[in-house]
Image (cartoon, rainbow, N blue to C red; front, side):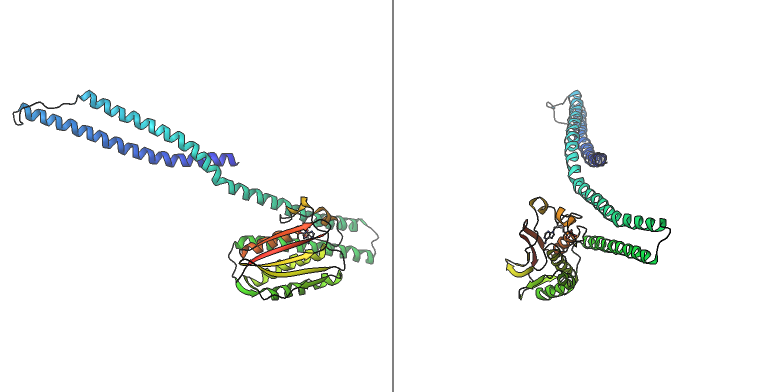
Length: 334
Ligand code: ADP
């Protein structure tokens, strides 16, 4: 598909260049043949004047008409060769440039296709579970009301999973659409961290994990709600992927012109193999998949990364398997 588009684009580049080159060639040819005709005319007039005795006698330098015709044909040949060279050169350059132009579009379409297949895959899992349990329930002739209730509860759980997944997909596409159009304000980082801590309270309590947030006076330029969302994703992961009873430390410091928020846990850590993929959409570590109580769709970190980038910030991770991880969010200082 892209090869055809590339050839088409090359053809259009060539068409434009050859049109310009032909117009110039015609202008050059018309100009030079006009000049030769003028020389011919002047020669003829002088010849006539001489033969009528109007011009002073003497030798008139005369160019042979054949030489003039030969000059015309040489100009024609030179222009044709010049145009053929342009055709060859711009064909090769056009093909190369068309490739360069289409490259980002090809990457974007690849990315979109991966996103669609990832989303369909994740949506299929709860849908299949829902379908199976409903079919089993329908097939059961003597379904008691307790059994029916339990089946409905299971279905409700799967529906909730679907809601969470579609919410995340929507958030991701909303942030991608924004592309830097987020209204930013100056915000105290400490307020954001406290709000995020409040939102993960239920999970941290259930896993007896303490969130230890150090005092900070720094302010950043960001959008409040999405910054809280970013911190909630990182707190949520630190809690989910740590054994019960540990402490997650949150430190805020200044690095050059940025404010760095570092979230450190002593949980299961991330293997080297997984580390380079964790910010990709739908990527989940093998251990995360198998870990009970660590629900997820592999979308959290890609949403977090997108949010940080909307403020001109970034997010990175250092981790050692079995020892823990530190996620660092760099945000431009206000
Ligand atoms: P999810 O948590 O839903 O799987 P994320 O995008 O938030 O998706 O994280 C992607 C993967 O990165 C996780 O599946 C997990 O393997 C790894 N990960 C993220 N945060 C941590 C952490 N604090 N400790 C260990 N692994 C983590």
